[in-house]
Image (cartoon, rainbow, N blue to C red; front, side, top):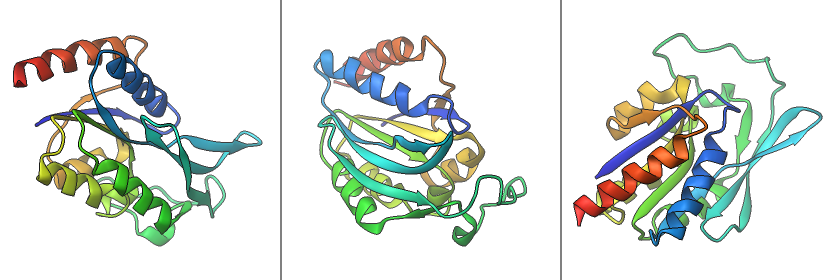
Length: 184
């Protein structure tokens, strides 16, 4: 299976890049499924996250901030922080809603965003692992928080990672179209 990652720190364009990629590939006839995780902001602060169905656009609540920004210590390199120290409270119904979308068959699975929760084996990770094992997709593109990449790759296997750059959507469209054509 073809696996790519859009890897960057928070607020660096992973979600925007993933949604643009989905739109461009859909226009070329590639079937896409999955979820994006746009932030909800207020007063210059991320207050939570929603889930957005790819490609339908419907939304569902996912997470609400529980702890103030900067109130948490960064984990030591190679360490995954305990769930109770994460800044957001995640909604189990939202995770179930996302899992349904991740498990739909399509040419391409897109999932935003894999971070510390997934590094712990939680969040979107179980649905992504199931989807990969069932072979319902020919390729996958994951948005991955840079600081959690090693722990996520330890659970999912190595992904070819890209940082979000102005030309990344064009490069990934070309690469995925070539890869999908070669796989047929």
